[in-house]
Figure 1 (tube, one colour):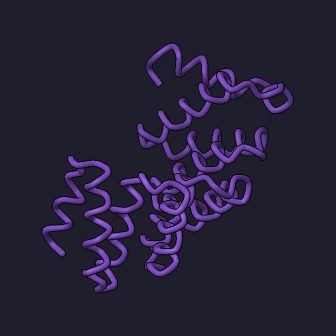
Figure 2: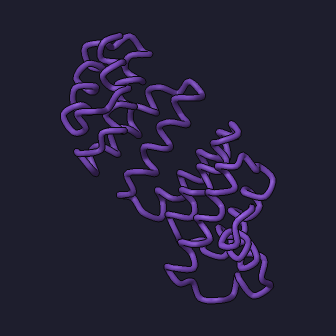
Length: 173
């Protein structure tokens, strides 16, 4: 990474005592930002290694496991991503982002019915979750359940009127 904050975050992650120091929200937040930055830079060597270290140091953090899932998902390691999202859900049953993210991975590997169940769980937790409504619509559409998909796309649009993908997919359904 080229900026000083990212470098400082990486150094903090590599401290020998990092795993034994008590987690503080600001420190963990900064560490997750560094991991996500590495993912965004498509650094699929350092990002998973640092995410694994965070998961070991903060095994009870649903946010860490959800982030680790995203790190695995980006290069297409869907099995590992699903495992991380599942851990996040086991830690925090009402973590709508983890349910939605698990749905995305399940959908990507062709497990559309399981994906639908994950999206519905995310929506059950947060009825105003436009992305989950949209993703549910995509899975339903892929199964040829177009009338149900249309309802999901409309729900996404009601929540986020400018949701371009939902408008587009509604038109295609």
